[in-house]
Amino acid sequence: MANVSLKHIYKVYPNGVKAVNDFNMDIEDKEFIVFVGPSGCGKSTTLRMIAGLEDITAGELRIGDEVVNDVEPKDRDIAMVFQNYALYPHMTVYENMAFGLKIRKVPKEEIHERILEAAKILSITEYLDRKPKAMSGGQRQRVALGRAILRNPKVFLLDEPLSNLDAKLRTQMRSEIAKLHEKLQTTFIYVTHDQVEAMTMGSRIVVMKNGVVQQIEKPKDLYRYPVNKFVAGFIGTPQMNFFEATLTNEGDKVRIKFLNTTNEILVPDEYFLKVKPEYIDGKTVVTIGLRCENISFKPEDLEGADALLNVKISHLEELGTETLVYGDLNMDGDGFTESNTRVIIKASGEEEFTKGSVVKAAFDLKRMHIFDKETEETILPRLPKEMALPCEVRANKLILAGNEIALPKAMHTADCDGKVIIPVEAISFGGELMTTVVKVEQVNKQYLNYLKLNDRYLFVVTDEPLELNKEISISIDPKMMKIVSFNNEVIVDSLPLINHIPAKFLKVKELDTITGKNGKLKKKHVFNFKFDVEGVIYPSPDTISKKVIGALDVKAFDSPYSIDVSPYDLKIASEGIPAEVEAQLDYGTEHFLQVMVNGNKYIVRSDEKLEGNVHLALDINNAGVTETKINMKLV
Ligand code: ADP
Image 1 (cartoon, rainbow, N blue to C red):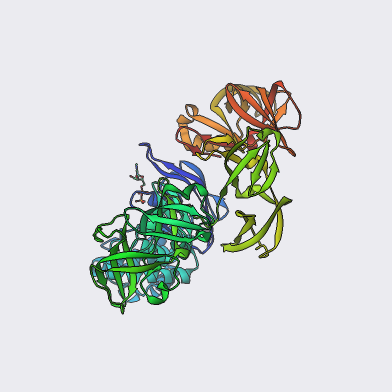
Image 2: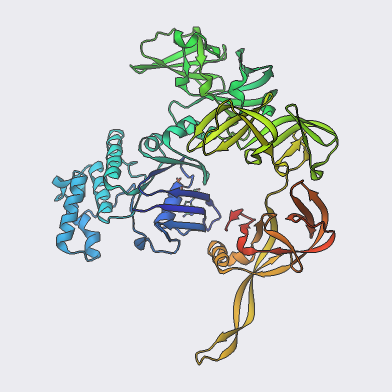
């Protein structure tokens, strides 16, 4: 039994393929984790790195409390089951199962007992005397599972174990593996390209694409709250319907215009509170997603529905208890080919439909998804990261929803109209802005609170829900605010929270004093690792050197890096990196200096009103290190 933790895990194959890109996850003891995604997305590579069959380019892998990057596969306490079960054909099932234990010199009686126990769990007791060729694929795969069970591992790794089996057997083995997990109470990590397998087996699912984790979520939440169009389309059959549309603000309503159709609806703006205003401008094309079960023809759903649309029915798939109705929102569309107007609707098997007819359908907007057409990210996130609110600047006061907020000196600018972008974490309780709690949503273990500031909404994430209708005073951290024009040109930027300082990694031959065998001190040449940061040499801490060389090997000395350090960790000192003060940034309660080093701009927290030449002190032990050519976060 063990937890598995992956921190900034990367895999770059020698041919340059970046198969896994910054994989981060904490897998708890006894979880059933499924890695899912299309072929080539990096699932197997990740699993093989956990197994120790593939070197980890960068990052830290722990099984239990131990870092296992350099631990041999056989010492990792894992068992792996592959798609090809690789049984020895000349041995019986019993001998196949006993083989590994015999090699490890487990006593004969113990082997016998453990095989009988495993055979019982997998219902293969009656086949123990058979040779593999006299068994079906499903039975052979069970033997392979049996071999894995016998090792009594802390973690089970399964790589597409069912893909050689026919559909019926796959369904059966699926529930058997789930049962096995239940019985063994061990951590399982399972790789598949089949989303149904993932949804039915996983306690949590990791969706991957092009080496990048897209989302990690429980099956139900993954289905209900996909973070992007890829996940939305990958999970669920039939696939989610996607339509292109524009959104226009009309008072307390929003008009949705479905492109390439005559369908237009006016709906309450409460469905769009999380959507940034730039998307509700009547021009920007967005992708609206709705699953087939969230569209209905039933009279009780049509009555009082917020969104009624005309659908031209093209054809039906009658499946007995339910009927999949294919149609188009475009009256000239054919409903057969996938398009941004084609719609699939799940109706009950009792309902009758006429091909070619045009009928009204109710769209359940509470279940609606909206994606940015370009980035494909959701613009209706469960937990918004930031808000964008219309604002004005007049005489260095920010006018936001009827409130005046004095801008600190560092943000002074000419009068303008635009939007202010506010990260959710910029809001804190206590302050001069009065808001009312109007809505609270639970999201996993946190709460999203909607605070109404006159006619606008602000979001705050808390661990305990705020009381509904309560008046709450808040303040907004000015240094995190960004003011932009309506065309998204930056007028006043937020203060960068991280400085990226370019650096080189060096191996330096130095004369060192060491204690010899006879106890006497003597001089000896040694190699030390250093960072050249803006021309100043810093010793590289051992932990960092190990990670850099582990990831890049000999290329470590030719690669470019950035040392990533917050303004709070970069200090003004009497010696260090020579810099020139360009500006004193006054944020009211906090002060910073903007300094230049070799044409690069950095921010330093300092209350001193300094000018001219200064030095910057850097604590590499508290800094992040990123390789900047392939963009790999090492520390
Ligand atoms: P999946 O298991 O999701 O199908 P893989 O982890 O097998 O994906 O592969 C991820 C990517 O890495 C693919 O682009 C694949 O071509 C590449 N890849 C896999 N193994 C190697 C290898 N030994 N050498 C180079 N590239 C590889």
